[in-house]
Image (tube, rainbow, N blue to C red):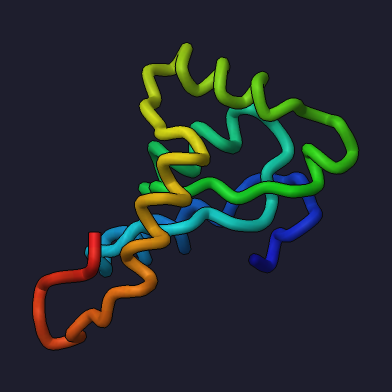
Length: 104
């Protein structure tokens, strides 16, 4: 998040450290400025969720452009409707922190 709005790229080292430490989906947030930044966050950072705002608000990139780029780099992803319906059920479910069941 420290890179939020900078468009200088995600903090890949931090994102990878979190991704390696937990068994939950990890969000890369803060710093996306190029198409390559999205790819690096997923591949080098190990993020399963890529968050961006400035590049879309200021029309530097289009969402379709990012999706097409990632598809061309063999990145698989699910659409927003699938994400919303999948996580809606998970949020409503109580998860026992002592178990290995993380709700997904």
